[in-house]
Image (cartoon, rainbow, N blue to C red; front, side, top):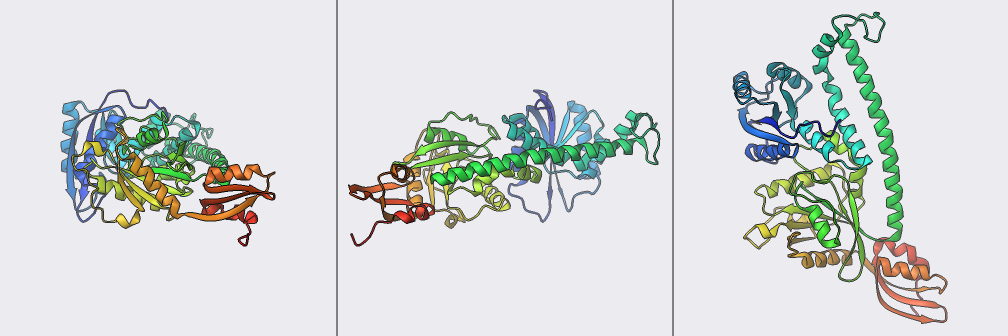
Length: 438
């Protein structure tokens, strides 16, 4: 669980497999390019890669024996310290491959690599808890690969095994069960801690909803530029780098739209293909911020060769966490890095209320984006006339905060206002409707 699990420079070799007849978001070459970026983000140096096309995954060693022998030779020749597979390895694959490569070689898969990067980048207690939970749940079924190590460590004797020399199982198995129970206990504790976080988030969200200020969530593939966009439109100073998973913890900032209407803009963790399911589950409390938003800004890197696949991965992940049909704007970011100034043709364009090309770095297209946000919210507004008693100045202030006041005047009974407010706030002011006969 240590954040510095990887040395600063560790020599790594990548392995990727394509199974005939299967489809993935990214083709094998692009997937390995992304895996190399993940390895570099984790502080590793990638020395090379090897690929194989198979009819099916080999049950024992994942790849064929001939290919395994090739990689073993390369690992020895290049003095490789870590072998990273692009797909998640089963406990059996990890056990057999660990035997093949030996104890001196660190064996990782994409999931373990992503989990380690998250551990390095989590900066809050909540983020650390979420990553710790995902790591424990990932490692629990893989404890079997520690069998020979534990048995050797126990010296072939029941002494010190925790059972006082009594029992029918060997010392390795006994220690394995102890390890499993300990990890299960830690998982239960972390889940309780995260449930408290979830309850606190829900209470905070309910309080926020009472104010009527709409919430916009930024979603997108990792390194699409969400944090940079947040900084641009809110004058914030959120950490942003040209790096995968540069930020993990959600950040919320207030933003003023051109009409004067205020909204809250929330940055969320970036998605990636083959994102470990344990990680999605662990970040449930954080991802609930997305499901409760009034509008999603789906930020994509227009300059990336696999941008269409990135969009598909994000939408699939949103479906996986059961995001309701919230209005979406597709934000084609980094338009300063492409010569084509137009918006690409996208098959599922009807999914989005609008599409805008911007550069979060230069500011190009930002005014168009803000106007598009205004248009989406305008469609969700209702117009009403209300009469607010003089002693309820707080309600007048709330109307100015959550909506747009078109006209205001006073008479002996109070303040008369013609307003446009979100439909979700209409019931809140229903008792103050002005008499239409006046």
